Each structure stands twice: as structure tokens, then as C-alpha cells.
Image (cartoon, rainbow, N blue to C red):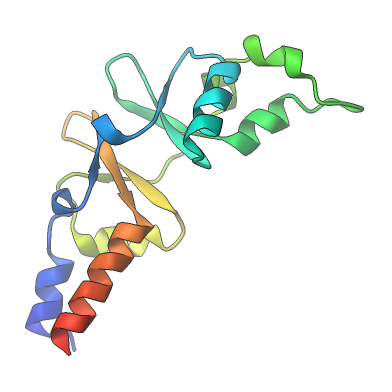
Amino acid sequence: MISTNTRELLDTPISDFIISSEKVAHVQIGNSAEHALLVLTKTGYSSVPVLDIKYRLQGLLSMKMITESILGLERIEYEKLTNIKVDDVMDNNVTFLKITDTFQKALDLVINHAFLCVVDEEGTFAGILTRRVILKQLKKYIYQVD
């Protein structure tokens, strides 16, 4: 049985916990793989959201996706980086949250993802919710209950 306090946490809107889009590194449709590789390398992130010109979420792009696209049979073909576009190699099958979703839904989804993209009602990228933030909230809740 779930206690009242637990239900309150699980029903909390995720909008309280997201990292806003202004603080999140991203790339855009049409950017070159070279640009995306620079963004990933400079930020140290394993993957970043891909947005269109209206800042709607289109997919995710990782370092692995880029490197796989330039692997030749006998060498890494770096010269391909400028000709490959982000949209050629990104994953457009992305698990995401809506800004109105609850902590419970985020908790269910974040098990398999280091972060989840969050979109507003129009599909505009609002930010991300990280596994770290979810775990910090759970830790805070557990210590408050004790």
C-alpha cells in the first residue's frame, strides 16, 4: 500500500524538477556531424537532443551514432564528417515526457535512460529531466520519511 506522502511525491508534476532548455546543450536538424561531434566533445555529454528550427524535439544524437557513421572497412573516415547531417544519423525514436507528466511516470521511464527530454503542449523542447535529479528527490523523500 502506498502512503499519502508517497502518493504526493509520485503525483508531483515534473515541471518542478526539469533543467530548462536554455541550460541544455543541443544540436539542430541540418547541422553537420562535425559540429555535433564538437558539441558532444566540448560538453562531455554522451548524447544531446536534436531540435528543429522551431525548437521542437526531433530526436537524440550520440557520439556512438556519429562514429559509427564514419567507420570504414580499414579506417575511420573523418572527411565524411562535414557531409553527414545530424538528421542522417540521429535516433528519432525518442522516449520523452510532457511537462504535465508526473514524477511517477518519470520514475518509470528514467530506469532505462540517463535523461529524458521534456516537451510542452506544442511539442517545443522545454528541457531535460535527469536520472540524477530523480534519485536526489527520492533520497530527500526517504530521509524525510525517517
